[in-house]
Structures are given as structure tokens and as C-alpha cells.
Image (cartoon, rainbow, N blue to C red; front, side, top):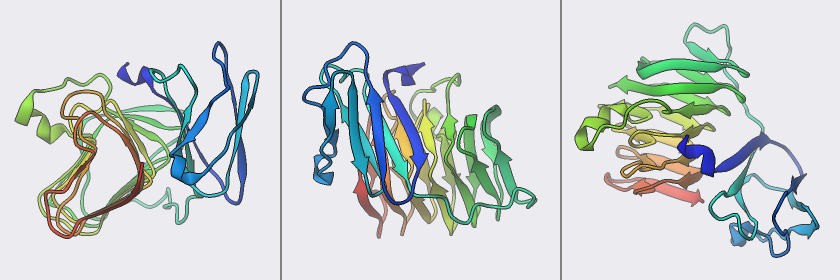
Length: 240
């Protein structure tokens, strides 16, 4: 799995939390917590690194000698307005399970895909000219095991692909890994926040949206464009 060279953990918190990382085979001396603009100073001795987080964010625990196998810590705020599992318009993927949804799992107007923290969903999610659609949660959406098609043949198989016009689209909170093409792309008006995007192939871009789209408070480690500013009135802010 190409994601094996990246290591991460995701948790939600409120207030203040101290993260403790125990290390085997590496010297913790000189560890930095990036992005440096956050001003987080780690405490380290022997095999342990500790650092305190008071605000949500995405962090790289940069241990000397581990650049080829980086460790990321994603600290999210608590979820609010979690959808009702009994709602027929909520497609709920529960924690502790691997869910195979296939390529181009189509959703329709008014539907919400909820990937619970601890759920691992394999496939891609698509919509054709739909509005009022949501993909959210704290779980993982992965393209692992699906073929990578060259050039334009790959476009319908972006890990999240909202094709055609549409309004009030939301992608929030999830981690995307092993994309076969772009991680998230919409032709409509898309709001994206607190996503974590890992891409490894050529053309595994991070994010693109239609006119008036926003991406904020998110993380990308992808192998092409991070953000595709191809449309007017787009906003990207507080990205790592």
C-alpha cells in the first residue's frame, strides 16, 4: 500500500490535550512540531516526545531521520450536528469495519454520506449535477485496489467527484488516501473543511471546486497541484 510510508492519527478534542509519541530506534533530540508558525515546543527525552495542543490543527512530528516515514497528528474539534443515522437520506458507514462501495458510488440531491471515525471505506463517491449533498465524518475513504487510468480516463474516478453544476455541497473531516486521480473535485459550489488528503501518483491533486468554492483548515500531501484555482471567487485558507 502506497500509504504505508505515511503514518497518522486523528482525534477530536476540546480545551487542551498533551500528545505523547514513543519512538523506537530514533533519537528524539531535535524533534520539531510543524508547522513552525504554530509555535509548539516539544519536550523530549530518551524515547518519548510530548507536546501540548490548545487549538485544532494538522501537525507533522518531525523526528530526525524519519523524513521517509513521517508521522502526522490531526487534532480536530468535536463534531457538531452529527447526522441522524435513522434518516433515510443518511448513508452511514460505521466504525470498526471495512466497507467496499465500488467505483463511482453515486449520491443524489439531499443525501449525506457519513463515514464514522474508525470506518474504512474503499471506493470513490460521485454525484452528477446534484445539490445539497454532503460527505463528512472522521473516517477514511480510500481508492486502494482500484486501477489508475492514464490522463483523461481517470477523471470520472476521482475519489470524490461532483460533476456538473450544483450548490450547497460539503466535504468535511474525512481522510482520503490512495486516490487513483484527484482527491476531491467539484464542478459546483463546494465547501471543504478539515480534510486530510494523501496522494502518491502523478496527477493525484488535492482539491478543486467550482465558482465560489472554499477549502479551509485542511491538510494535503499530494503529488501534483495542492489547490486548483481554475474558477472565480475561490477561497483557500489555513492550509497545511
